[in-house]
Amino acid sequence: MKNVISTDKAPKAIGPYSQAIMVNNVIYTSGQLPMDPETGNIEAKGIKAQAEQALKNLQAVLEAAGATFDNVVKTTCFLAEISDFAAFNEVYAEYIKSAPARSCFAVKDLPKGALIEIEAVAYLA
Image (tube, rainbow, N blue to C red; front, side, top):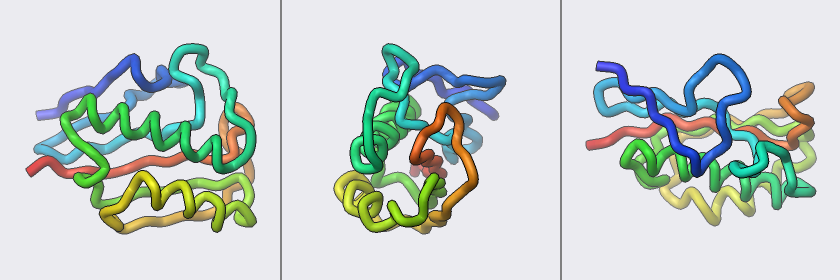
């Protein structure tokens, strides 16, 4: 059974997709940008502030599915600049302490000029 996960505590999707989908207790989140959930704009400046907002958005989506960061088994992190890797890791480590599997790489561009986008796969026991 497929369940669509949605919350107003994270930004609305900016395209034809869901914030997350849960199938058989596995949660697949869409990438979370550092958008303010209320305005839909990127207010945060710099990689650390944007990483924190993206992680807060991801946390809200996970919570809407009944999960926390402890349930995350895999993240994929997209950076606009690989030179932001160390600064991003500092913020990431404050939020995600369970050390899930992870991919992290630089991409040419991200929507809305974001510096970071993060998606996750989580499991509910």
